Image (tube, rainbow, N blue to C red; front, side):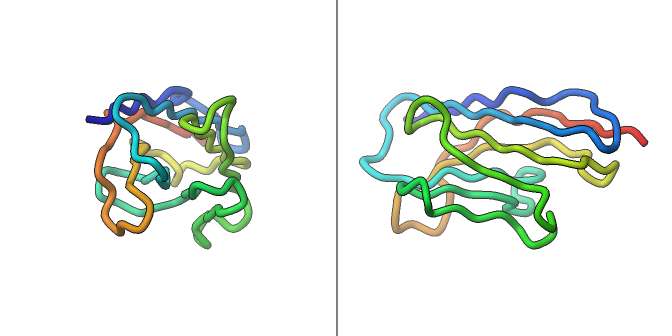
Length: 116
């Protein structure tokens, strides 16, 4: 089993920046990809592969997104700049074994609310 815990959500103003953190623990895969979803089962907005250079941010975020590793391989940071009310959602962190398409484990989610 793998456990994921997100942090960093809350109430923001339009134009603010957001930094979400996700920490994975437990029986981690030997290599894996971690991703962020907007809504459970919703849009994959960012992901980082086993290589720190293997990153993805959705086109819909138009350059407002950065995903990176934290202090450990199992910690991932998502930064969203110039927040908009449309960014309001529950954001979920998820992990999948390298080579798989479907994400195997999900965190409980963190609410982000952006007011105008």
